[in-house]
Length: 112
Figure 1 (cartoon, one colour):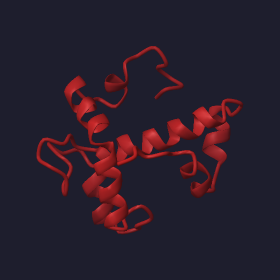
Figure 2 (figure 1 turned 45 degrees about the vertical axis):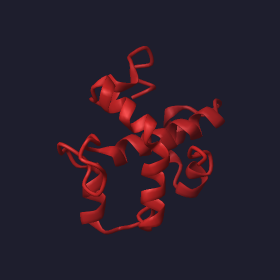
Figure 3 (figure 1 turned 90 degrees about the vertical axis):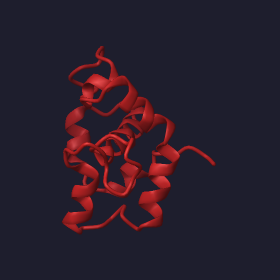
Figure 4 (figure 1 turned 90 degrees about the horizontal axis):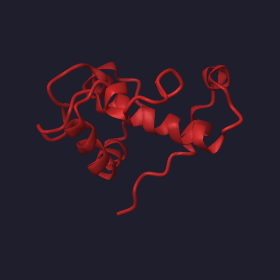
């Protein structure tokens, strides 16, 4: 979405209200910790993935004031960090990258 809509506000790109987007930013550390603690980062369990990525009033397993699709938001932040670290890359390069660990390496979750 950053490549397609570079001038649009981030909350519009992910279809959140400004408050929902702010919630994600304020709780990024807790979201990341929850995913790591529950060993969900590399899960292939479709039910677990759906909890974090499907449309819903809130993200299952997170507080009820969380927006739905927090997993999509976090994935976007991970990819955004990778593209920021590699400005020479174009969108096709990103889509061709098969090493998820290489992409994940750029992401620095907020410190405690």
